[in-house]
Image 1: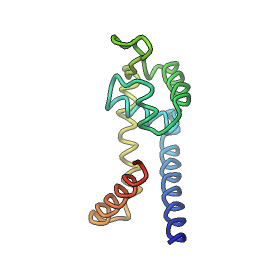
Image 2 (image 1 turned 60 degrees about the horizontal axis):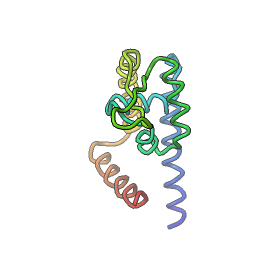
Image 3 (image 1 turned 90 degrees about the horizontal axis):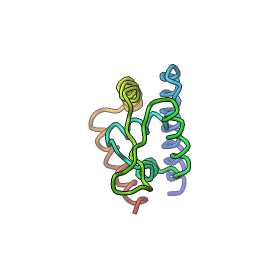
Image 4 (image 1 turned 180 degrees about the horizontal axis):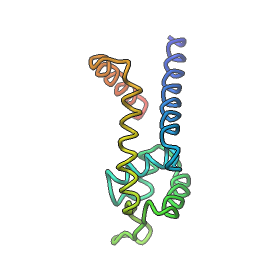
Amino acid sequence: MDEYAQETNYLMHSILFNQQRLFNEKSNKYDLTVQQARTLELIEKTPGMIQRQIAEFLSIRDASVSSMLKNLERDGYVIRRRDRHSDRNKRIFLTDKGMAIIKELGHLFAEVENQVIAPLSKDETIILLKLLRKMEAEISE
């Protein structure tokens, strides 16, 4: 079973790496990393998140999120506002510039994601999703 585990992990890593490479190739005019773009997408879907929530959702260190948010704020994509209930937390929202770019990037994400699963039939995609969900559930407990 070890040989299958090793190959499975290699292939999942390779697919993720190549998906990020495809995104970077198609998005070079935006001057955003994949992580920054995913963060903007997350904030667009859940406005008012706090930094810790972003770190947890993206499975990255709080310090990395802090640095990334500073850059996104500096470049005019996000704004941080004080939380009415806690002075420690700042809620993060997209600016108009952030909303505009996420609309463009949303199309790009969809294009890359569709390219990754293009070789699979609908039934194969459904089976793969079930298997990946099962794997994810096991390791996230």
